[in-house]
Length: 330
Image (cartoon, rainbow, N blue to C red; front, top):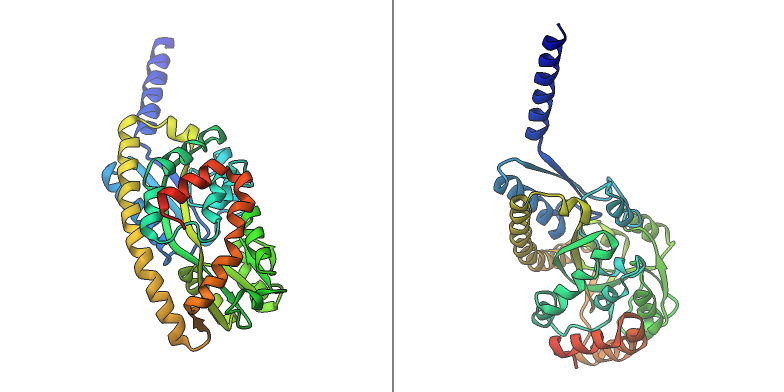
């Protein structure tokens, strides 16, 4: 009888192990943007390609619009392993102790996308991603989202007109310094709270990219947008390090391929959606989009660029100099 029971027990154990082996690896991918933003579409593209490449051995669950974690919570959740993947803004890593990433928030650091890509797709970008690993984070890629602009309830065509305006920013010492350089009052708050804050007058305006301004419907409660294009708006695709290190090598290789393809997809969509967002906001008739004249743009660059040197000791002067050289910043 004991032998029979042992046989049954061993068969049950073998069955449970076999069932467990067949269970797919689940990746929870959380982000704060809408599903129809470039980031939202790229996350879905990553899900599709991952599940195809791994033949269903990996299942990706995408959580949009802060439905799983708000942007102030998500990074800690990833470090604790409560979620496996995120794509936060680069400046988010500054408050988390990796201040070098705040270099992406420096105003007018990248003269164009070509200069930006020489940094993010080259040795400097790779070296920055490596700095995340001591924080239980593996950096996989950079996803573009255009450049940031200023929205407001009154015209702010020149730096002087920004004085005294309460402007919502991503939490970062650099972003605070940028707003103060033009006399504005920086207000840090969760991304999911911005629409209501603009609607109720808690803040006067916001610093962000055009696709988010459109998909989050912020343009409905903002009368003016100034195309300052002052700061890179982009994301860093990251994964929990213990989770990543514990994956089979072939699964990691498939995920790396999926991320690479999703990055190319994101960057293409980001460029297209930026133009679509501008056209849609103009067509709504609710918001005036203003492009500064060359003289006005020079005023913005002069006013804000002082932040590059001001913040260089915080993010690393050598890093700032290296990026200026690589990107072709004047």
